[in-house]
Amino acid sequence: MTARAQVESLLAIINRSALDALDEYEKHGKAVPVPDSLDKHPLDDAEDKLLLKKIVSKLEGACEQLCTTLAPPTHTVMNRAQDFGWACLRVAVQQKFADAMKRHPNGLHVNALSKEVNVHPMKLASVLRVLAAKHCFREVSPDVFANNRLSLTLLSDHPMSALVDLITTEGQKPASALSDYLVDPEYGQSLKETEAVFQYSNNVMGITFYDWLQHKVSPSTSAFRALPYMTMKEDARLATSHDERKVMMKAMTSMNEVQGALFALQGICDVGSGAGNFSRAILEKYPGIQVTQFDLPRTIAVAKQLWKSDFSGRVIFIDGDFFKEVPAQGCDIYYLRNIIHNWIDEKALTILKSVRASMAPNSRVLIHDHVLRHMDRRSPQDFASDSDGLDKAPEPLLPNYGAGSIRLYHQDLQMMMAYNARERTTAEVVQIA
Image (cartoon, rainbow, N blue to C red; front, side, top):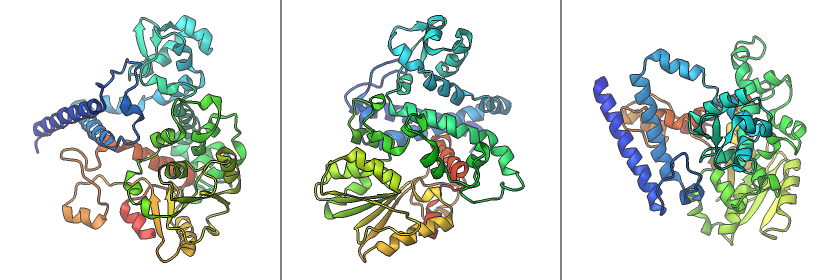
């Protein structure tokens, strides 16, 4: 395919995907809001946005590939090297820019805003313009800024705010040390979960990331508020207009593919359950199901406090260590969501062996992880041998949708930095399972 033909194909993909996305919004009764809008759309809170996500992945991949094709290479690389958006997001969340602007819906001059957020007005304007250039906040007139659709997710009572704070604080320090760590003669070749770049950058060698969470993160910190079980925390700072199930569903991958078979089941063990986000959603929808939540003692103690007497008789709490045993015997399903990707193959096998020892003959293991994909476009025979069963993007896109799936590769890097672990391809999961 010639370069011109590739560009024309990318334009066609962009046009078709944009129209498909518009249709998806309009199916829910309202047109898509423009970025400067403060209005919510019914699709924002829909539990199943899988189709829209697929459309947007194709759109993102095509737009990025088109710009990369047509722009000079130095232009593209410089833009990526100078991308300090993460640092500006961190400032915005920690200093509560969105909260201050919420009190001034028509906008606030940086001179006045600086007094509310304790940032020098000149520096404040620089930070806000980096964000506004990508449609997070808007400049309504010179040096006057207001909230918009994206910035509303940075409000301190929005779950995304705590997550952004955690990622941009605890995630970026290891990222800055990555180049030194990878060539460090003592630690660069290590695969120990106690010697990852997170420990290296924070000078806490000898403990796991989970140890750090258990012993170093207090309830007053943003890291604590961003932990998975905090979607259920009864804390005014996190109060939203959404019930707990909707908050969980917004944060987790749709479980529709799984739930269709649940009416025939009776017992599920949520291995590494946290405080039971998955359990709550299942118990609400399927009255005949009993769920066992299994996690470390401190986590289960938190879960018991949060659940109180909810679903009495239908939820069981068991604490322990899945490297030693999974005490819940004979459950229909043993569900591991975002568990295996935290560990190298040897440790992952230990967990799975613990699960297997508790299974009945008809029990099943459900591993719910991200699926890493390679970016070479091979023949159908080669794809079949990889056994991933995933759809491939149309040419000339990369088969994994390129930038449309970039979060997966960021997640893979995050697993490496925190645990010396990784996301896996389907074939790699099959190999250890």
